[in-house]
Image (cartoon, rainbow, N blue to C red; front, side, top):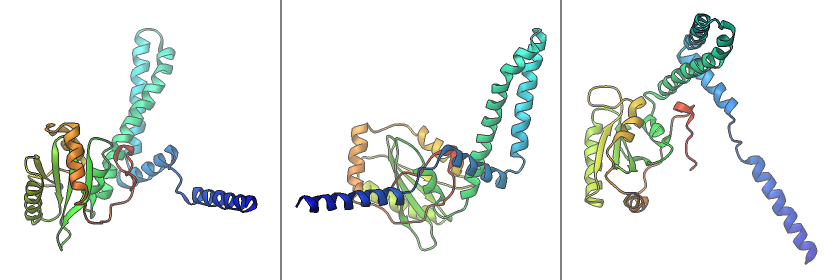
Length: 239
């Protein structure tokens, strides 16, 4: 029996080792930066030139200020990290814009943005979908239930239908309707996260947990999510 136990342990160890090898490696910060660099280069070819310009301007101002105080070399050295900071900030802004541009007009783009919110919101994508691929996503947070629709103008009917369902299923819980996209009365993808975070908080944390628990059994539909780097280095949650 002892020998059999050793064989079992060896088999378990081999299985664990194989699972560790098969598990996808966590993407390093360098890999994320490379992906962002390629994305920016594709969508904003002049972005790197603007980053270099920001560095040069910051360094020139540091030297100019140092020269007025008779310490140009000292302030020039101090200006180096400031220049890098300005260049990096400029790069992140371009990367953010390029990331949104890469998923614009793709199926499930709104869900991709919603699911990248780190905390405070729980999103179920595609809770209601029409034949022409209009869809409504459901997000739960301190603001209540937020229904985000994306698609053709006909998606408004889908949004109204889903709102009625939520009001029947969870009476008294505030429901907010948002249509993602470009145009009058819509919220652009790049402003979607900020819009959700600015909504007034109407539920306590305990009430949010209760709403999530009641909606857990409702679920949603399976749908494709746009691939590629997300804005500001955020990562998709594990499923």
